[in-house]
Every structure is written in C-alpha cells, then in structure tokens.
Length: 277
Image 1 (cartoon, rainbow, N blue to C red):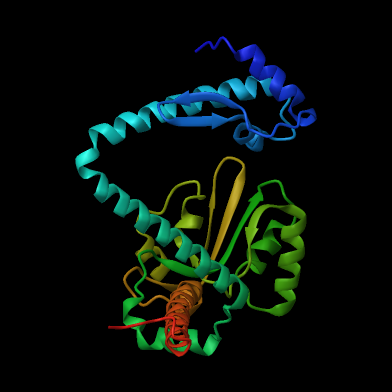
Image 2: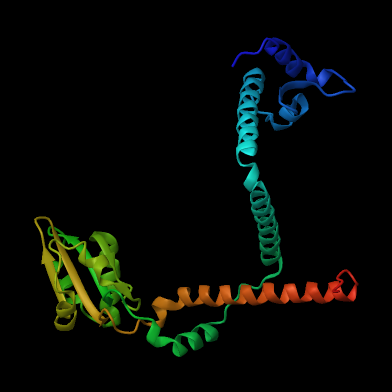
C-alpha cells in the first residue's frame, strides 16, 4: 500500500527526537481509530537499522489489523458480549496465573524429603508397573583388535573389587562405548538396540543369561546381567523417584495456593474490603 504522505512520515521519524510538538502526529486512520507516530516509535528497537521501513511496515500491519477487527465486530455483533466475557476471563486467568507463579518462585519451598517419596511409593506401589524390561549390569563395546581380551572376558562379569578397578581403567583406554554403573536400573531396550542383532525374547534372555558377548565384523559386545525386572512387575523406587517428587511437588503447590487464597479472603474480611449482602 502506497501513501502520499510517506516521505513526510520518514522525515518525521528521522527528526522526531529533535522536534518538540505539543500535539502528537497522526500517521494513519481507519474509521475512528488513529495511529500515532509516538506509538510506532515506542515499538521501534534501538537496533533498528532502517527506521523508514519499520514505520511503513508497522503502519501497513496496523491498518490491515484494524480493518479486520472492524469487520469482525460488525459481523459478530450479536455474539460480541460472549466474546467480551471470554476475553475478560482469559485476561483474569493470565493475571492470576502470573501472580501465582511469581509467588511460587519467590516463596514456595520446592524441597521434597526422600521420606515423603518413599512413603508415597510404598502406599501406591502397585500402581507403578514397568512398561519395559529393566536390568542392572554392564555393557561394553570393544574393538576385536584391542589387547588383553582374555582378561576382559574375566573382568566384565566379576564382582571382585580389584577386577572392577582393572575393568574401569581398561574401558577408559580401549572401549568404544561402555556402561559400568551396575547399581543403577536401566531399560534393557537401550542396550538391546545397540547389539549386532536385536534380542527378540528379552524376558527369556534376562531370566536365563548372566553374562554373554556378541560380535559383528569389527566389535565385541559384552553384557553382564546383575539383576533384572520383567515388564508388568512393580517398578523399583529408584526409577520412580523423580515422577513421585513431581506429583508431591504439584500437590504442595495446590495446597500452597489454596492457603494463599484463604489468607487473602480472611484479610479482605478483616480489612472490610469484602461485603456480603
């Protein structure tokens, strides 16, 4: 859209900081609504490299929006009261939510004691069912050309402390990939998907295999199963801690905000800001 007064607008924008007008300048109008130059300048960033382009673009967008809004109000006039109500409710919800988040960020204690997590887990244990097989163990991928493979075959399935130290040192030097945190539960599918050939019967494998290795053209894949749990059994607390913590945290937030509402209500009554007829 071209405007005959565009050059005039550009000059005003460039020299606006040097001009002291008692009345603001109108640069566009749609029906009864005016766009003021000062409103455009307020939206302009200090980093704007082309102020004339910015004003032109902003003005065009404003005109299009006002025209759409005008025709929307005309055509939706019968239902406008409902829209106003929805807008007011949405605004109220946004303000309340922003205020609640501010209070939570400033005053809410996010600490959840491990005792509370454990108590919740024990109370609702049967609700925590595994949707996948899990295991505790080790997984090592090593090149076939690596040294001391015979010792690795002994170390990877041992629980002797001196062997575990040797295993850690060996993996750091030669392993392409390794996982030795055998006190942590892990989904077996994570390891299974890395094997040369996927184990289709995971449950049978976990029940019957303690230690094994697989090979492809270049690498050996060692697996040691220290413990396991089958899909459908109760999930261990270690896997559910964070989920339970979030549940308890949300519960505490709800209680905190309810308490805040009650306090505001009681204060309103005490200060006679509330009148009930």
